[in-house]
Length: 325
Image (cartoon, rainbow, N blue to C red):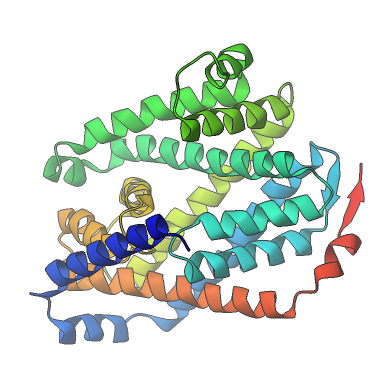
């Protein structure tokens, strides 16, 4: 681990610590514990089981994108790989670890490293596209939230523009423009040049495969709706009384905020954003923190299950999990 990485992790730890301090300094820990203890166990089990629905949808989408490149992977192999990725997401202080696992496993299935990166890159972007569209739709049903946070419509407007641009680039990649920008003629810093090159390779890889991309988009919507309903079920388990329609805006905003690289695995950010957004519906900060902690506990449990899968996984398993098209 180099000095820059250590400094970055140190800053994130500091931010997480400061956020947790600010959020919890006036919180009633007894009330948080009571709220968690009063949650409906059957509904919590339903909410946790929805992670496995998400695994399946992710595996279907990943398999579809790999199939467009001439590789057919076994469904179980992809689910196990995603579970291992969840373990690394929780073990490392960023989500890069999980993506690296999926890239590695795509490469093991017979693709070049660059194409393996492209498949996972497109997979992630399609998920973000669906999440963004859900936020735009959710704006129509979350009046209390938009009234409490007047700047939120501008944030969603930015997401709308990003979604439209992303959709255009995915389905009609401006290949010549992307290659020109990633070429040597433009004075672009190396890190951005590399990113542009990856974007170019990723989109060109699926050029003309609109049938595959549309099916992958539909799977992405199903996946993100599953995430929204998961948080709604948690809220019902805690008896919040917040309508399902509101979560179509709350969840995308919360997820995008937690993805900002300013903390360790969203610690501190998670509690703060749910407390802020749910307050528009009369949910007190202790109850919102309870939801945030339950959801994070579920994520850690997923990581532990992924760690178990990783411990049992055999390196040679990929050879039996692939057939080339």
